Image 1 (cartoon, rainbow, N blue to C red):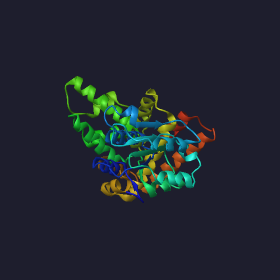
Image 2 (cartoon, one colour; image 1 turned 90 degrees about the vertical axis):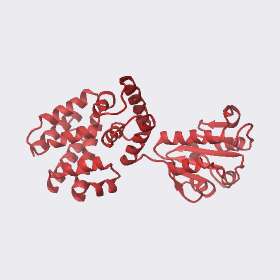
Image 3 (cartoon, rainbow, N blue to C red; image 1 turned 180 degrees about the vertical axis):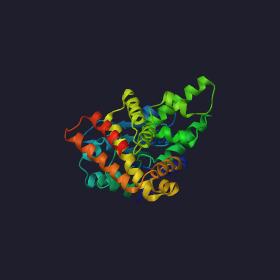
Length: 335
């Protein structure tokens, strides 16, 4: 298990096999909800029912003497469980001094204990991380790709007896900014809504009714007006998003990202290759390629630079956020 970074999925598979060799684990990355689920799985694997009070310790406080607290806890034997579990959920573990004493502590964790470090984003270059890789298991869990989220959403709803097609699953992922915590919340909302309706299949109308707006779908609609000479539909879509209290900087950033993706889609020219290259779902990649085919590369580059100038105008106080975005949409529609 040493000398490599595991993905969250690989770590959970190892845990499912028993995890008898685990003594030291670091969970780090940007997908905090998945990391929390990994911690729950560790607790379930080692702690006996009802043994949480005696065999589980969670250290959350920032402290300069964090390693002293760790040392005090890992030597205590479990009372009722397979192993004692000590969880450190604070980034201060990276701020504490790490020398030979701390290195020796991590190297010699008793077989009766599992020490779990969950500092947040982590830092691969620190001595602490290198020691975990050397003596234990380092698990990196970052935001999942769109294609991975589509599968996660599909499988999760399937377990609840609910069907969802790839297009709706992709839309749900975008609506939640690819955040598993929010996706999990929306899935539960969908389950309750469909149960109340006596249905077992998610439709796009359901998502529109009960979930956050799909910014990417709205940006596709706005971009469809570019070069058409008509901007009424695009401004109407923008106004609808603003009425839903969507932040203008977020809308501007989403449009900016979309234009970059259209340039990449135009260059690649194939939805399967684009999906593989960018880790997009085939549905989303196909829509990008189809929309990019309406423009030549020079047009897309000009649209991108127009968005870049609009961003600069806002940063330099030339235009207010909303006016700058509306002006950009009008200029791009008329170009």
